[in-house]
Image (cartoon, rainbow, N blue to C red; front, side, top):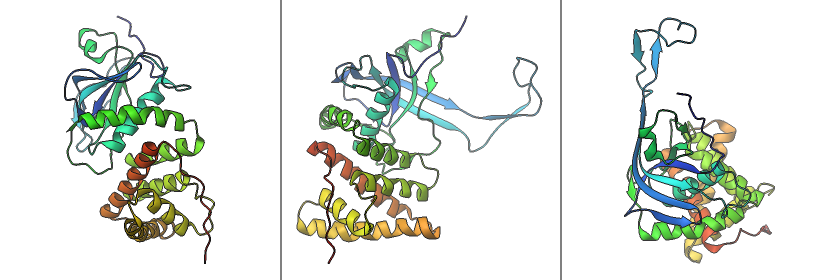
Length: 292
C-alpha cells in the first residue's frame, strides 16, 4: 500500500504534546483549535550496522544499539488545528509552534510537539499508509521544570485562550516575532551558554535595546520596569538583571561558562517579561534613557 505523505503546512494538522495533561475531555481554545486527551508515546534507539545494505534493502544484521542516543517522549494531549481563521497569515506549522511556545511560557514542564499528521493521531493505529512527521525533535530541552508532566488548570486554559489572539496579532510585528522565536530557540540549545546568549538577544529585541550605546543600563531598566511590582521590587530586579547581563557578556567576549542557576534566572525573567507583555496587550514602547 502506498504511503500518504503528510504535510505540516496543510490543514487539518494534529500534534502530540508532551508536558501537559488535561483536566477532562476536549477543550476549546479558539475557533478551529482544540486540545484533546490521548496517549501518543514515541520511542527509538539509533542502531549501528556493519555492512552495506543491498540496493533498496535494509541494513543487514548484526546491529548494535547506540548507548545514550535513546529518546522517548510521552504525550498525553493532542492539539488539533482544523481552521486558521484565528491565525491570519499563518501556516499550520506556525500556528502549531506558536501554541506550543505559549504553553512553554506558562507551564513549568517540558512542553513540546513531538509529532504531527494530517489525520487525528488516534486513527494512526488503524492504518499503515500514514507515518506521522517528527516536529520538535531536539535531544535537549532547557527550562525550569517542576515535573515531567503537569495537569493544566482552568486558569492555564483561560490564559492560553486569552494570550493566543494577542500573540497572533503581535507576531505580525517583526520585533515581537523575532524576540519570541529567538527566546524559544534557547529551549533547544545544546549548551547553556548558547541558550543564555539567545535569551538576552531576545530581551534586547523585545525592548528595542539593540542599538543602545549603554546597553546594560537600558536593558536592566526596561526589564526591571516590566517585571517589577513596585519601586523596591524594580530596584532589586535591576541589580539582578545587570549582574546577569554582565555574565552574558563574559560568555560572549571571554568564552566563560554559565552556571545553571544563572541560566535559570535569565530564563525566568524572560518568561515573565513575555507573559507580562501578552497580559498587558501592548508591546514595550521604545525607551529614551538619559544618563547622568
